[in-house]
Amino acid sequence: MTGERTLHNKSEENSLKKEPQLIVKKNKLMTGMWTVNAIGRLGNLMGEYATLYSLAKMNGHQAYILPQMHNQLAKIFKITLPVLHTDVINRIKWRRYGLHDWMSDEYRHIEGEYVSLSGYPCSFTFYHHIKDEILREFTFHDFIKEESNNYLAKIRGDRKKVTFVGIHVRRGDYVHHMPRAWKGVVADKGYLQKATDYFRQKYENPLFVVTSNGMDWCKENINNSLGDVHFAGDGQEGSPGRDFALLAHCNHTIMTIGTFGIWAGYLVGGETIYLSNYTLPDSPFLKLFKYEAAFLPEWIGIPADLSPLLNKKNP
Image (cartoon, rainbow, N blue to C red; front, side, top):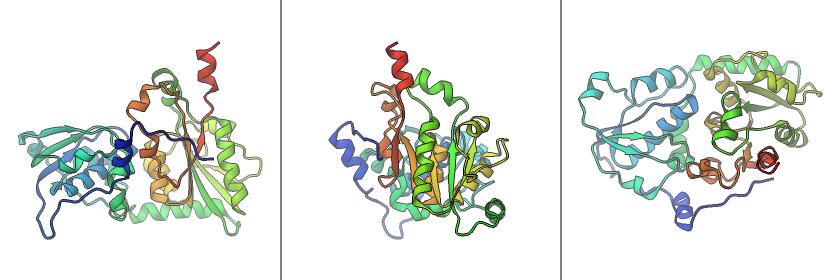
């Protein structure tokens, strides 16, 4: 079931596999100020935070986050990085340093006391070597844990030994953006059927919890003939934090595309099924994104059906 993965060259393969060499000496104080842009939605912000946390530590500097990042993440998680004041941000002469989406050797030796990282980094290759610390940063507030567990207990009802499987279906703007801009597709009915069947065959009593920004589509296309699928929010899109917390409190994950689902799988730590090979080989998306850097090797990839793209290409 695992999708094919192709690395661009051997040096990149080695870079992805290599454990970061920490240059911080024991008892050495972190110096300077490092920060990162706060762009995108929840999954992007989590990736930026985790990457800043790791790279600043790796290079021996103190990490700080921007107020807009703190405003979003601190509502959900017990994050610990200090926040930069607006007046301080505007007075510092930052060295701007752009990142691509995965870890590279040069990021272990970034020069500068005052560095502002930029980009949309979201890859375990930046921070997997300090996974426990990253998971600790993304500890939910107690009231969110309680709300999520109460919700799951309610939908479980009288069922015994339930295995919760969170499903995140990214639709919205990506339905049109993927084929038009990236020569790619979003998850379809067939993919979700294969993914849910995997858990139905493996676990005695699975219960699927669906979150999505396209819930009407989900209700029409996810098979609920067995009554084991719960559409969280009863068709209304919940807040990102609430939906994310529900997914993160499940036992396993089915994701489609996007950083929101990637982070849900990473925090849950169970089995994760993801949509693989969802672009044509000549997609410009593959210059910005690497499957092998986004999805953990133990995760299960199900290749996407690219026939809608191929039919358009060859009428």
